[in-house]
Length: 511
Ligand code: GAP
Image (cartoon, rainbow, N blue to C red; front, top):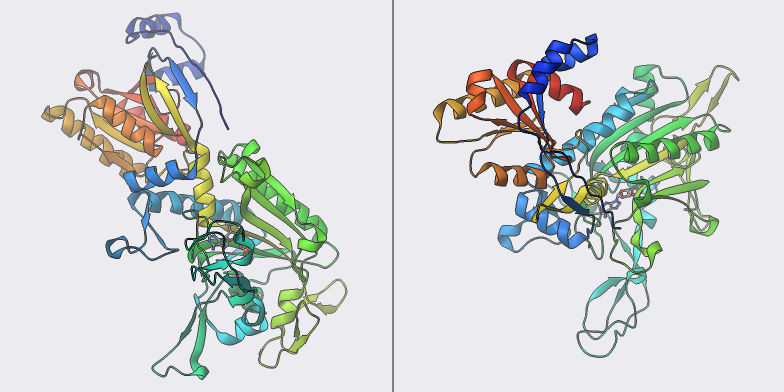
């Protein structure tokens, strides 16, 4: 993954003369509007060499240094498979979720939202099949006593106790976190932390249907935490024990499922690309028949290049989202009088569900079990993909900068307001006032920073992906204008303070 670009721009100090000549030469309405907002363009002499050479190590280091993501329970040596999102991380992750919710729930006419409890009645996970089958194959090394997921350990790799591992036969290890609810900790009070948000949607199918009067096709979307006791959590936030999912269950009439599955694959792929993921780093992988879960008719995984350092290009990619055609398997498991059919053919009749999860089809005058298409994404993996894809190292006039070219909608901070001289009270107060006004009027996360010289402040904002810096200088006090610097091009424009919000809004779009 390497990408080189150079840009050189003509040096022009403030273009007051240009402005004057524009004013004199007249022009159309557009030009006039632009002139009212942008007073002058200051282009810097930018000699830039840009490289995208990113790997997980660099992202982990940036995340810790700048407050995106920390090890969970760090103060006590950590808790494996957990991560805490810091001041910038929580903004980024919230923006990822907001962008998804906007696209999925607000911009479509066929979706409803939902937010279910994380603790679930044991019966939900019994009839979904999780209690019986949600496990990974686990092996132990008889020499070093370590545990591994059977498909993730190379039996020939070096063992800490010398030579190679001596592995046991694989046995299933259930990934669900079990707990008890209430003051009596016995088998009657067992509950699970949900291992996916999907089950909450299935068991609420009738509640949503009855309360909204939806007609097929329609979907239910949910974002929330899920828990899996992964045998070997690894690769930063890629595989963890507590994570978030953004899941859709899209209910359709049987017979239309294949068409809807294809539509969702395209829609979900396009979502990542629309937020800046480079197509060369995102693949669609159609699971082969022998890879499919026994209930799935088809599954396409979206794979991101999480491991660019790996030699074999195919191994560089791993799943960020799966889009499955699950037929009526889930509603069949949970419907009153339904049954769970396991991979080995065994059938478990549902003796506890209280409602039929059917839909009355007015065209055929029949009660049917809808089919479901499920696009299921990991929030943490999507966040990691956006971080990795936006990471660039650049040499600018022999100076190094790291820049996160995050899509403005995802950037944790939209605008930083910086005083050129922090010891000048008038400059400082003007900058603080601009920051407060922008924040109040637009709702953008806007910050004020005067803790270093302007060059350093720019670099710090570049490194966390802030699309625009607004600099207040001595001229601001005279002409009520500020310099707006673009993160990506580093070009600068002089903008009137009272036109600043309009100017930034046009560039920030859906923020
Ligand atoms: N309801 C279907 C389902 O949960 P999944 O493939 O097991 O399917 C969906 O999970 C997505 O959730 C994955 O594509 C991944 O992004 C995320 N995910 C799953 N397990 C994860 C883990 N241990 N850590 C981080 N993300 C995980």
